Image 1: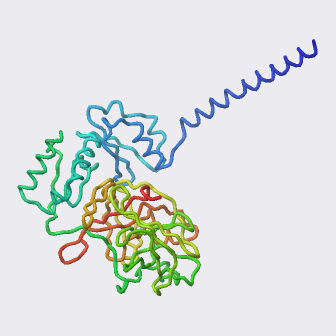
Image 2: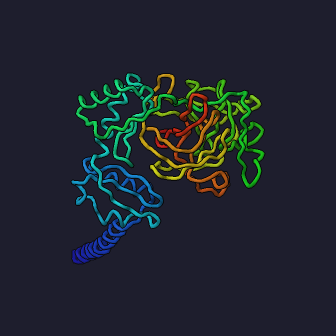
Length: 383
């Protein structure tokens, strides 16, 4: 019995010792987590999660500075030093006061989205940079504007933050092309167009940016999130159809997703071979530099100018939660990837490039000329 008691006492002592060792280790881990520096995407997600909808006015970039809008009456509760400590070293965070919360602007934007056809609205945006609701109108008449104002007031909104844009001579349309278009990509890699740039069944790799045929239209092979999963646009066809190269050879299948929160995209699965390069997802934020790699326009660069916009997409399809940029696009660019790096960096095996989304549409004048901006589906909306 004495031996048994000693044995139990020894086990108990060891248990106490182990528990005493575990608690400080746990405390250290918690402390390290508290001081952990986050990635850019993790940090912006933390900001939006920590701030209440009543105090948050949105965020965007001005150069390397991340501007966080805070409602004036709530500023004191939002200046959290512990949040700033978690920011990546190359990002400066600046708080600015605004009048209206992003949730209030979004509420009115979402309300008007249901009436885009009724009021000839081409685009709606809860603008984080200007702290207003932008309304792009095909019918810019006084009667139409007054009708919109009355509808907003009846919904408990205000006319102070409404900004009407005259687009009566312009149209937003897709950037799909035709099989007969002579639109081989003009941009080069290291001074010349790589031989595998245009997707071909004879090669084992299908390169991002190459021209592909889906149904009766020409598209661009967009970003690949794995060797067996790439994306393009979802307009111009429905269901699942074959994807062909320029010789008419079937190289895979595309499944369309178009409308509302789905945006405009298709998932492409190869019948053989693989997609290259494989990239990671990135969160679109207004002010970030962006590069489109299109089969017609090649590499065009600009900045993300809006996020979370509603677009009236012809014919009679409303797309919500889209993004806007001031990069150039043209017919045949539909499906192109929007990246954080240019072609030279994206199309390399060692690339750490990320994609923001998939090209969909642009604004064109009556002559069919692109006048900007362009619209893309954020990569977070695809599966």
